[in-house]
Amino acid sequence: MTNLRALVAFAAALAMAPGVFAAHPMLTEDPQTQGTGHFELELGQSFARGDPLQGGRGTEFAPQFTGGVASALDLIARTTWLTQVPADVPSARGWGDSMLDFKWRFHESAPVAFAVRVGVDLPSGDASRGLGTGSAGYHVIAIAGWQLARVNVNANAAYARVPREGARSDVGAVSAAIVGPNASPWRTFIEATAGSNPDPNIAQWPAVARTGLIHSATKWLDLDAGYQARLNRSASREVWLIGATLRW
Image (cartoon, rainbow, N blue to C red):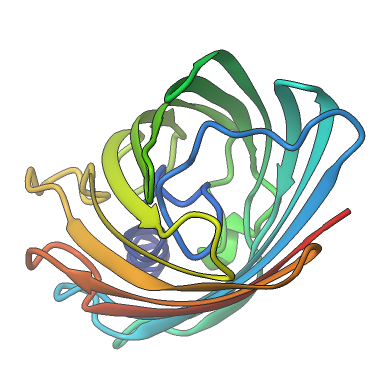
């Protein structure tokens, strides 16, 4: 049972939930939607070194499919394939938990837009091997965005409840990102985020910063790479990210 708790805590620390829902490789969600009849497939891969308490390393492949069902409403499905190698604990590999969400952009008046993303967490991972929580949950993200001449500024506040053994069930997160320049095939970003510590015995919120590049290779394909560094000792040491986004 101690090994299982260590695996769950290790996975939660790497995920930094609930701040991992946004467009790869960013953590911060923007308020834009796909539009009626348009679709998007994000293929994001992360490579992480563990937090100071657990050590080890882990990878996450997180495909996310988004469909525009109305001009301001998206439906979203996301799952994960995890590899976890904590220090001094048996490693685990397999499918993790999944999510079903909707995203609603309920206000837009240039240059400001507001949206909300709400969904359920589905226990599709094998909880007995530390690859999932073993129980269903839910999450909500409040999203604000500002379109400026050269850059976009986005901010999120999130809450999630997912009961899990050996880790905190109620978690919150805040994040902000600057993305730009607009109207360029090459964009960069810088963001910071902090979220509840998955260890219920530690009050300090893990805090991280991310940066990276996003290249619009064609109208239907983006390629991206990013890097995450910790801002305090409660966060994962570092995370490298690569990904691709297809639209049609």
